[in-house]
Amino acid sequence: MKREKTYTERAREAIQSSQVEARRLHHSEVDVWHLLSGLLVQKEGLFGALLKRLEISPAAVELALQRELAGLPRLSE
View 1 (cartoon, helix red, strand yellow):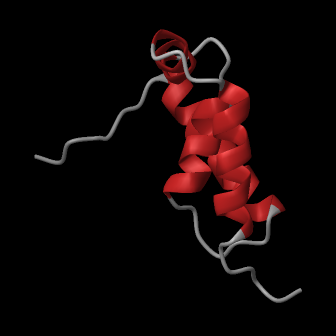
View 2: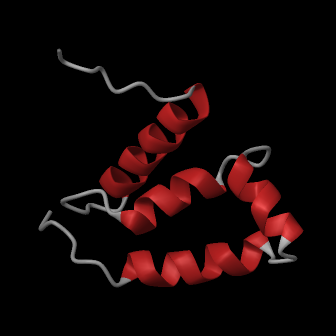
């Protein structure tokens, strides 16, 4: 019996956002940094609540995330 993979609406949105970010940055694949970016844009999501509870600034995470994304190899244009 084949089991379908189902995701919540927010999970699908995060995955879609991560794919858009990878394309925007001309990266050949979606990796953990893109997925983190997809979660970070969801201000009311679980990730945002976790950051708030841990007293971690979303802006600081965004800055570190951008630094990591900038270091990934890009497709030639």
